[in-house]
Image (tube, rainbow, N blue to C red):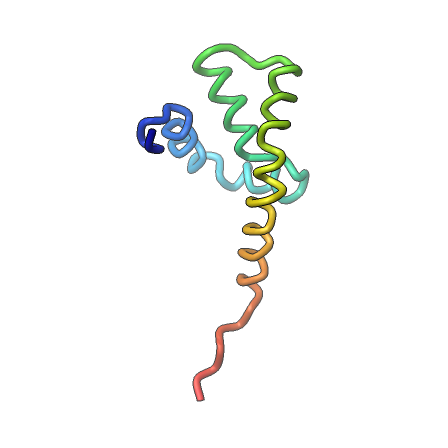
Length: 89
């Protein structure tokens, strides 16, 4: 299944741009998981609001990916934003 075939992915891409600033603020200031926020919103719109058990299960499933993959990539991206490009000789 490609990302284009995934209804959650399509919904997330469409809605992320509308709320990017606010989502990144929640991520940076409150350590919220943007993907979990988007997933909860998608479920509420398409199906029904998730209960605490469902939300906890979603967070548990995403924790390893976030810890092992997302956080190191995010740290590298932030580091690179603060690195000056090399000066030409």
